Image (cartoon, rainbow, N blue to C red; front, side, top):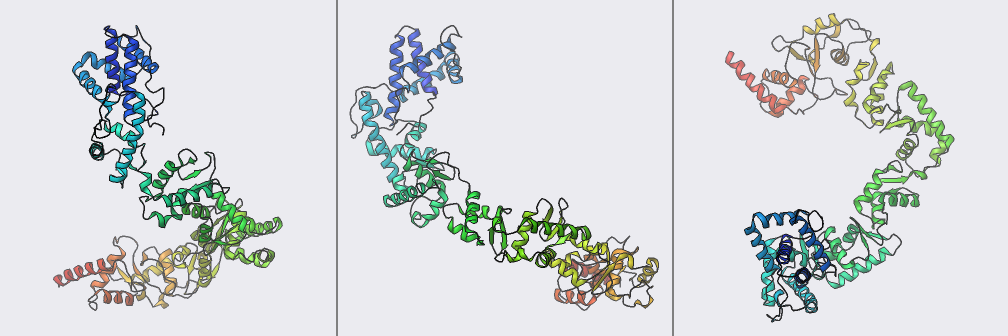
Length: 620
């Protein structure tokens, strides 16, 4: 198996040995050729004895000669040698000159780590590094050492060895000594490199493949993968493999997609390409899940549920399929109930589409927007062939398909259709409706809200920007109601409690004294007046305006800096009927302050009411 030392970067111990060899040459104790040869053998022998296969070029004599010349250039300050900038070389030269004791410590350790090949004896049927006599014998021993390494990993580290953990590495060394009777004289860094030759690494742990899954499962997995790769697609996703073999993998150490991929890389070696999420026959295989899903939908030519697509395209990652199904909305059109269809399935002619576009444009000219119900109604009445030719597609699907085909001309904001660039919301559409109608009913507004997929209560107050609600059922344009504001405010003032500066709107019932305003006075009309025209007063209420019940508290518009909750507290403090939360809510409903027995701040209001009541009692 190839060496993990693909980058032959020199370490400080090797450079220290190189410096020693150079000094021996410079002092005339040995000729340069012999020094280079001896150092090459020493460095190469170290790797071989650690079970690491090396090429002929690794630390060979030519390479040593070159590195010695680079070191010589630094030592002689450029007078000799070859210029090859190297920070580590410069540091060792400086250490040799200025911190020689530190250099000697490194050199002593280097001699121990990289011993010269000598005659050997056998310890416990396995030789140590110091006992190897020649390269041939070392090459014979290396596979045996790897075999022992694998056995120790398999037997003692079945759940993985933490490759960067000194604790695990030292434990491994102890086990190696027990098994062989000989030393394991490697640094932790070197040991980690050798161990990586014995298994696969994932999330910082090293595993022996043979222990990760039984041979039967490995063969079954490989057969399945080979079938997938040769099926025409040329790829298979790790997630899909894991899902397909999920039950069988439960009893193995393979707990996730990442570990499965790592294992497969070991099994297949370099025979296939491994991407981040899939393996393929070739590195240039292009996997586009969106295109796969869209193509599938086009081929089906029918409405299909999301789960059915996921089930059929089981060779693709589930989340990716679901994303493709739901995010390509301009191609895969929603038909409701979790179903979609390909846009090409929608049968409509250019002339039919043009007629619909003109109708939308005309409607928007008059009302500023068009609702989805109006669109479908027009299609049904004026272009029925579109409905007839797409009988399998529900109204929602037809509307969505038209939105895609007319996207360059109009904005389709849910159920609101407006001119391109305007993008009206449901609220904007409700206001546009009020602005364009002199008179309309609550029922019409409710129907509009329903068609726009919104709730009418949220918009009743905003409608008063252009309209006045004159009773329970009818709205009219503002200009049609003539209010004598000063006279009306004077009448309302007489209803206001001087001590509290407020009163429930329910208490204002005698409308015979109110001035004529073109319409009969009702509580709804009074509600609209307080919210839009009064100079002195305002109507404070909980949440939104109700459809069928007028409620709230009338109070001064200016000069009274209290909240609705504080008004509620004042009213409760002056009522002795209630003793608990339920009874307090009953009082507020009966007084007309709130529409129903729900008020989020009731606990706070009760607390303040009790404090106010206590203060009032002390004054008495």
